[in-house]
Amino acid sequence: MEPRFIRNFSIIAHIDHGKSTLADRILEVTGSVLKRDMKAQLLDDMELERERGITIKARAVTVFHEKDGQRYQINLIDTPGHVDFNYEVEKSLQACEGAVLLVDASQGVEAQTVANSYLAIEANLEIVTVLNKIDLPHARPDEIAEEIENSLGIDASDALAISAKTGVGVPAVLDRIIERIPAPSGDPKGLLRALIFDAVYDEYRGIIVYLRIVDGTLEEGETIEMLGTGKVFEAIELGQFSPKMKRTKKLAAGEVGYFISNIKMLGDVRVGDTITHHKREKPKMLPGYRPAQHMVYADFYPTNNGDFEQLREALETLVLSDSSLDFQPVTSDALGFGFRCGFLGLLHMEIVQQRLEREHDLDLIQTAPTVTYKIIMVGGEEREIHSPGQLPNPDKFEEILEPIARVTIMVPVEYIGAVMQIAAEHRAQYIRQDHVSTTRVQLEYDIPMAELIYDFYDKLKSGTRGFGTMNYELREFRADDLVKLRVLVNGTDVDALSSIVHSTQADTRGRGAIKRLRKEIPRHMFEIPIQAAVGGKIIARETIRALRKDVTAKCYGGDITRKRKLLEKQKKGKRRMRAVGNVDIPQKAFLAVLGGDE
Ligand SMILES: Nc1nc2c(ncn2[C@@H]2O[C@H](COP(=O)(O)OP(=O)(O)OP(=O)(O)O)[C@@H](O)[C@H]2O)c(=O)[nH]1
Image (cartoon, rainbow, N blue to C red):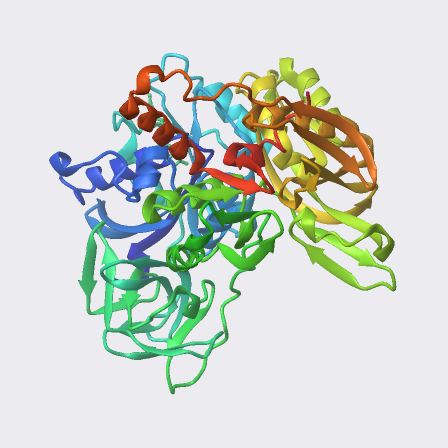
């Protein structure tokens, strides 16, 4: 199709403001999917996505809409709303000329509304403002339009008011996309330049590469080259998603679609790379993307040491469909062989852990998440560590630098005090405060990443009764007075239970951690001391008393089946435990190191 009849856009919104629902309605209104075939949230096709009701991977869909007698091709790129997947939003936006900013008309502007809007503004996109959920009795479209103007500086005076649920106002959104969002400017006859904005692994089709043709035309069967990696492939199949994969002979400037080749591994495709024709004049590369940043690290160990290879295979399979996951083998004195994994954030970590257990039937011990620290060694060498266990002895290094995030929080004004208190408890540095309306305010702080993953978000949610939302971005590494908090179980240093904390927090965090550990570690036949220590100094101690009774003593009269059942039950409970020395430590204990001050 001629570029002037094409429009490419993304929907950007805070989580749960209705992106997927609007995408579904657009498919329905444009007749891309028959109403009776309409499954709720058609674009979220991963089982986990549907279960959690969130979008993990970006999706691109092509629909057609007629306006004033002219048929237009509209490409919708669905993006995730959660902060962990900001990276995906950024990628999608670069393939578009415009964005529909969708805001829940009862909730108003939230942290990710702001963050995602800034990404769209930075990418120079035309923004079409849409207020959703006007069917709700407490919808306040006028007030929310004002919030949008105050917080984002976007003119929202003619924002469209819709209900993605009932479909009211949805056709007008399509008309406005055609009116306001510029047509792509590429030349279908120019040198081929296409942006790879995503790639997914499909069990049946292999690797599917999502691309946006910027200039030129790509035809099926042509040989292409990826300019960044220099790799050469044949475009075996080209197509668009409508929303099912639909083969086409060619894709031309402005269009969004996919290609399939004999690419074996996701690692062979660099998202952000430029595609051109092989053995022809080379065009200039497109700007591309910054690499994904791992914010959080945690170790996975198989509960059963013999499952190590199985865990490796599972991780290798997972990376095929999730290239933002990183993993390296590690060994721990206490836990044996496992893998240290890097994640985009805590939600990403949780999803990976669940996929490993569900899709690969593995029982895992996961250590508490940690952030990256930079260590300045004696002599000036700089090292990065991704677990407290890697911290060298204090006489070997000069300084520990920790990552600091700029956090933006949106709350109703009555919760400002609560947020300030939570911030103070998490070593936050106040930056600024802006009113987005008479009732809501935006607060900014610089907070150590370690505090964010400790329990800041949970505290914010409970302290603001769920009304507080936040977004963060990594700013810098800063030196501070940080120490390693060690945990000893029955006299043995368990590196997987240690953490890095600020020296002023060592006492409270240490006491809290071992109190929680005492609850999580079951009683044994002997007494177990649990101690927290900084350097050689013990700062807190708890004791798990010895078990006296024989658990099977109740089974009097020699009822062997009951006795066997009881022992069986105990054995099952043990599956998720690891023996450290002669103490069995359950999975939950490893995570109990984090989890709020007592
Ligand atoms: N009443 C009402 N509810 C809506 C409307 N649009 C969406 N919802 C509901 O809001 C919830 C969130 O909608 P989703 O479409 O999943 O939101 P999303 O923005 O795609 O969420 P993520 O994919 O998780 O970022 C769902 O329960 C929808 O049914 C609407 O217009 N009116």
